[in-house]
Length: 325
Ligand code: TYM
Image (cartoon, rainbow, N blue to C red; front, side):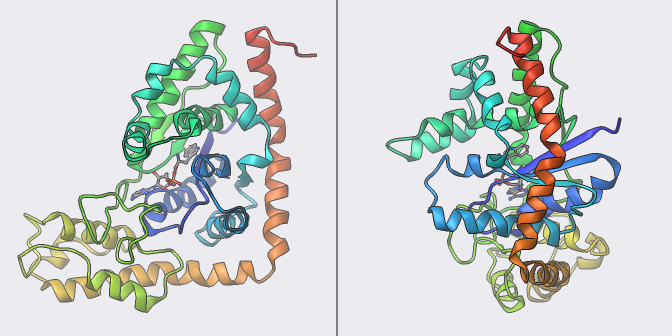
């Protein structure tokens, strides 16, 4: 049996170049080597309020972007989390095994709890649902960006705890980070991770941004007081642009950009990003020409993976002594 890969993206906000370089690009590259399942994690998205009309549009848009970015629906299963009841079911079973202290220590929970006066229970439970996503498929490889590392550690700890309480049940999943682009920073603030929830205009490059908008955002990206690229000591803004360029076009090396004036360097970065996104945007337009195509593809993905999810849920229930016929 081939090792299984699982990963997911929330259908909230606009997918950006960080999601592509940190996750989607890597998924497309490794999908042929494993049995791959890629998920639109809408149950995670609703841990903060989403407009229902917007969310149902975003779910399909995200699926179309998966395909446009190179996920081949013949080779990989593309699924929607909420369409497969095993995700929520396993999440409850794991909730009963998850120590509250572990959840309260998670960085994402702590930072959201600090910012908001009232915080939904879903934010606290978020890592349990994510562990359920991965363990439901007995995935051994999880390709993600660096910001998900703590969640993956939590998943392994929880799987181990379950296994030691109820007997060997879950496969231990390994984190798989891309060699370049595991952490893309905001263009407007290179100290902050590029994020879907940050809405200021110059922050992120959207996967569907027009070439002109991309040029403008990169031209305005925050740099430093130097005027030419010094590969030996790049400031965080220039280093981030270099990572983006290199991840988009492997022929862009430190040697090649050494001594370039910032204006010229930014033009090179913009060209590399535009060239990378152009075929993705073209395929996106082709795919979304026929809206029923995406629904069919999501239905087919679901049918393909359902037996795996039924097996795992039954195995877990049996291990816990619950009623299984
Ligand atoms: P999400 O939707 O925030 O991000 C999706 C993927 O994109 C990566 N990513 C980045 N990579 C590099 N630089 C960035 N600035 C950047 N921003 C985002 C993320 O690391 C991720 O791989 N909790 C997850 C979704 C999830 C999941 C799962 C992932 C739910 N269940 C099971 C893996 C396995 C999340 O919110 O990703």
